[in-house]
Image (cartoon, rainbow, N blue to C red; front, top):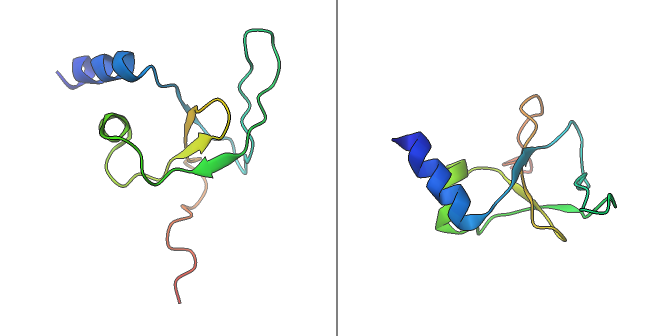
Amino acid sequence: MAEENREVVEEKTALKIKVRKPKQRACDERNEKGKLCAGHLKRWYDYPVEVEALVGKGAEIYRCEFCKIVFRPDPKQLPNSYTLRY
């Protein structure tokens, strides 16, 4: 049931989700001509409900500034949330 729901949401949003490589800061997606996007990956705080259904509530996700591909954080890297708490 959850798999079917996830597939329906992915088709509706046409969203591509990738996992960041260690210390990756720029997008590594290539377009149909083979040109590298190289857009900066920015932390995405205010994502829509459709994206929240795919990645979970309050997830740390990043989005390319040009091609809008969503990246999950590297699972081996510590999260960047709450790193500057005093």
